[in-house]
Image (cartoon, rainbow, N blue to C red; front, side, top):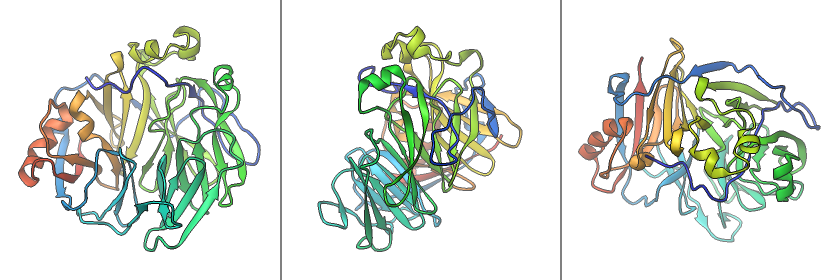
Length: 371
């Protein structure tokens, strides 16, 4: 089974909020989401729910390691951050894309990458304590934003129209604030780095991983407490968009603090379902991942047409078949033709990869569901 993460060095989950002005805001408990999906009994074979898989081999001159984050522009070009901290660009059919960025200290280069986002023709790179913004078509056009008004280390970024940014901080500058649940985890700043508002108090265990995902030019903050509600990051507000209903398997409120006693191992290995992340949607379907019993990685797809869902458990080798994005019709993966012990999704995709790609060659995979 795929383990979500090491049981060492990770901390605290938090609650949902609405950003309306230059002050702090809190969501009430039991927020009402726009959509809700009930997690069903797991399937071991999902092939009858998949109607189409398209494989686009990636140009072999594009050398990348495993993709940790992907965002897309309005034309379907993909921008990928890999596990080495390198940024790559692909056209929709697997050729080299429009963005060319190099690591370095020049004004049109980047030194390190915590996270990436895209909006309005520009790619934004979160470095340690600043944001570098590049014009995709001409990286000589760049902007550097210092984060001097943000008091905590920043892990994730979402750029939104109007030049604003949402920033997520899993950890406080002081560990005492993490334990006492003081302060907030989300900041909204303007293009000059000025703080507009703070929100999302730390209520339970969180992690500095996969907190913000892009889906069809919108960004979503993964659930930060037992409510399991994804928040859509709009221009002025955080909208409760999608609730994952785990039923009896739902993590109890404040489990990490009150029951697990701040023991991250007990939290991750518990039989409860936890950590919904990677929200991606098409017009008719929604995908997300979550952590199951014994820290097993699980995935689900929800149908907006009939309010039904399918779910399955991934294997250790299924990180190669993680859905990274979506458009109106398809979910998008970046997969590599390689052998392994595969779960329900990998068993569908791998034979098709082997037909079109050399061993070790990557491909853009677009997959459609119907149920």
